Length: 293
Image (cartoon, rainbow, N blue to C red; front, side, top):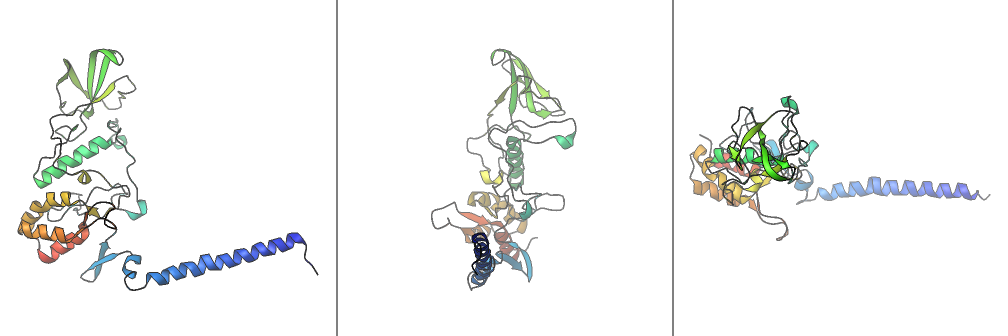
């Protein structure tokens, strides 16, 4: 007996679903798992885990912070780049800050919990802290000495043109001191919590300042990666930290620098990306070779 056409079509579709479910839902995944367990591949497919003293301490693919319980950098270790993933390097919350080059004005709210820093202020604050930790000049263009974005809201008599009538340092509130006392002959005010100086008609004007054109603190020391999980830092940021780490461990800086070179990887496939230093692997090698004082 010949089945009706519509029933035959449904049976054919059902057979196709079953076949592809077995092939793509069972056979293919199991084949990839088996392939991943071959020698030379199993370490990577298991997460590139790193062990020390029989204990898993992390992954070569995911960065981590080297800070104390209060979030302060532990001086005897090389520090990782900033992370915007959760509370830092959280693989379940991988993300960037989503702030861009035009993020230069902080939100200073009446309730401190509702306040937020612009990308510029985050960069300025990080650069200041990294400079102080490593004993170098942490100044950057468009940053104040107290580590916030050097930005003014300039009010003019005719909106965008005319005589300057009022100037506000939008990222500084009391009890700070304005980073410049006056602008074009007008005294600079501190920002008041809850005020929106852009909506009020102020022209946002970043002030470069006298910081060097090439900051001593590298860019990756003050900006988070797109994933928030980057396990590497640039050789330039590692070099910046060598003297501090050597001093804290009572080691010869040349010996610490040699360890850095040994843990510096090249470009992917020889031409993609940039050389990087795996911070976790480097710090484990430090602990092994130079016990902290």
